Amino acid sequence: MAQQPVEMILIRQWAAHLASSVWLMDAAGNLLYYNEPAEEILGLRFDEAGEIHADDLTELFHASNLDGSSLTNDELPVVKALMTQVPSHGQLRIRSGIGEWRHIEVTALPVVAAEDKLLGVIAIFWEVSE
Amino acid sequence: MRLWGTRGSLARSGPETVRYGGDTSAVEVRSTDGSLIVIDAGSGILRLGENLPEPPARIDILLSHLHMDHIQGLGFFTPLYSPDTEVHIWGPASATQNLRQRLTRYLSPPLFPVRLRDLEGVEVHNLYRGKMSLGDVAITADLVTHPGHTFGFRLEDPTGVLAYMSDHEPALGVDDFPASPEWTSGAALADNADLMIHDAQYTDEEYAQRPGWGHSTFGHAVAFAEMTGVSRMVTFHHDPSHSDDFLDLVTGSLHSDSVEIIPGMVGREFRLET
View (cartoon, helix red, strand yellow):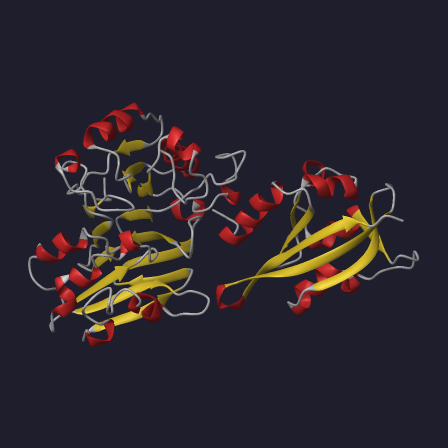
């Protein structure tokens, strides 16, 4: 039976109770969860998005630099945190599908368990007022 | 396997706890090849040590975690002092200390007169999440929801599967429990186990005052067993305030169409093969 590590289970449970927007990915970059405050910003309920494979994320969510220029995956704070296992921070624009662009600020943290095992990334983000 | 200690949190002796037992967690497991594994070293391990028919050549002790009710019997386990017996202790390290350092906090003055380092024939091993073998028993250890590094275990031998989660709060913060095994602590350990020994410390009313304390209600334990396809579930880690009569009442009220619910009483023996 496939089961998420207990650390990720607890993080998801914790995120579900927060008023801050939280995004959770596993070590392969698959989206595991985002909470209700995050849904407000992303414009898509998690139940509609579901757990998404890393390769399919860009079909659902689009990101750009603040000036509208393209942002590569490797420049995304969540991807940087995943690849380097070091916290990453930044501002960007994001939208889902044909929704509105939202200006957000993101702090992404790698989730590292005992024996330096990378379990994934947790990102907390908030909308920046223009 | 045999239950030598079934009580949680604190040993509770007295006429009210004779049948279910007052000693804290200790379970004896014997595999088909004769390997002896002891799960947890609560006060119940004292009687286990006294009742071994002859000193075995080797004993492996798996510690789920280092709360006092799971290690307080360790210093009184007579095979530790036997020159003819190798004792291997397996348990969780922390982020900064190995198991030996953590155990030494208890097994050293002023808390205990005998120092761990003075016990010959005792080897201490850090246990990590993953698989290992002891004799013909394949053991899977994984962290479960309980304060501090706490393991649950899955033991498999040719006769079947035993799951052990003495201290476990499977429903912590899970609004849709028990709907999602993938997002439930311990689910993989319990998956279709023939026998599961599981935390059943609180009533629903008691749990309402104690979320996050790391323990299960009777009802959550049953629901968890049903969710994971367990055949038989033994209630365990009885609250010190729960008398035999109270446990009879509560356990007797539990019901499941798919799981045989067994009151965890000291001295009970189980076999995996049916």
